[in-house]
Length: 143
Image (cartoon, rainbow, N blue to C red):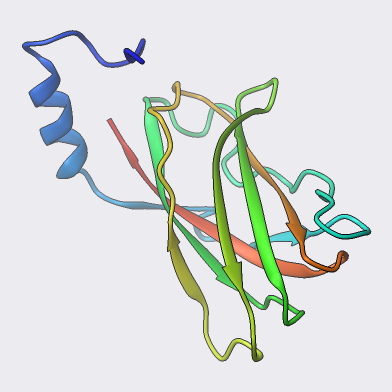
């Protein structure tokens, strides 16, 4: 798939260089984590989270690279689905498990396409038994 955000060659190297050497950012930054709750039932998606990144908060194309997960409350497998934009288009999924209470957070890789500027980011979570909760922040880079 050809990106509609990045320019065609020969300039793409500039954008990759700019991206790879840009400052990593945290969302939400300087604010509380985002809470996630799985749906009721096995592998049922819960409701949308609050905005992880609000619409109009990132005024350039960007992509997600990492999710920081804390306080998962059940010893089960989890999946988190990330969505972007006003119409909530799926852009990534991550999975993790908890076998004992977390004593610190875990950081998980995410790979998204280059997301359009001003995109809202939200998530939904599901788990192997239903009704679990977790806390999350994300790390991202701008282009």
